[in-house]
Image (cartoon, rainbow, N blue to C red):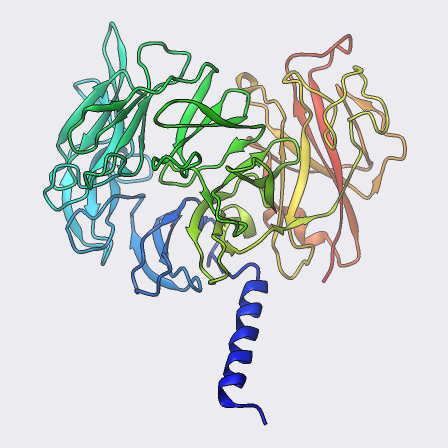
Length: 527
């Protein structure tokens, strides 16, 4: 007979294995169309003392606080649009909401309400907004920071834009969480990135920079408590869109930076020296608090950085120690992300993914504990040189349509479920061009069969055989399939063939055409 202790140990071990194998750990879905749950994500601190951070998930009308361990709804903060620090000193992060005059949806943002993160009550109202005011100042969105002035309230950072007839200046500012007044200002800096406490004085530091094509200012690591410059790392030599805080990649005690470059790649650099530590071919992901998405996702003790692979159209996690890919996630390119720590006690940090456009815009939030993919369908009809030749002799990359004026092809993919009852299927194409001057949109169309020998259409290939059915058009080439009028006409067992046509205003080679197509996609529907 087994002892009670041994039985307990066996059961505990089995439960741990079960928890580790469950992926997603949990999933929460929006309740009605266009709710767009998950259109912003970030950590909200540990509210219930279980050692797991809760999640702030933005939706169309506010923020929902979700319990990290199981995704259960903790509270809803109506009107909230972003998270501040702990402004009222009650130990809970607080939130902000825009005040519009006249009221939403068409009114201008004229003031900002600070709301309690504990119960949503109004704490104070600050006279700042993103509307260009009489002084020519447009205020940036707040970024949570630390208590820099020692008044017991967490302060925040933002970047303001001052416009005058003779100049346009970006200024990074440290703002009081108690009063909303400016404590410190740094002109000619379009980035401000919160870091950790580097100098050991108990207050976090922050990093200043500016898009590298503007030489007005150098990069600087600034003391949060005093404002003095602690280090002046060399700014990147490559054209750069933004800098995001990541983990301590070089072990010097300071969080480092992920620079997003103009070519959609990422470099990880030391925030102290500016030395490039890693160069990755993918685009760094970002959470709604303007942080990179990172954590020890494979449990090896090293920090990993989540990036978007623009060639494979997947998310990847790369080790900031070795540079190798340690996880891959097949989720829509329109997903929002946040690192959250270890939710299921398997010694690996987890990833929160929001899909705000899924299920007729209801949205979904998932907690992923390991590699994961929701890709469905079979892609074919490539313009990458593996099949029919592109009419302009300009193939795209592997898995894409023919190359367009950007030098890449468009890739159509699908995610979710082929089940008609589940009503959870998203399609999206990226890598395409759009002529905004002519207000032309990407057009999703379908047919009942594949073209055995795809003929040319514009600068692309027509891989779907007629009769064709025009399904919908979208400016950013993303579709929630259950919201399409054609959804009710598709039947279990039926295979439907999809492709995207789009305008490519700059004709390639000698074709003289001004349009192109993506690859095609075959989906067989199930009950």
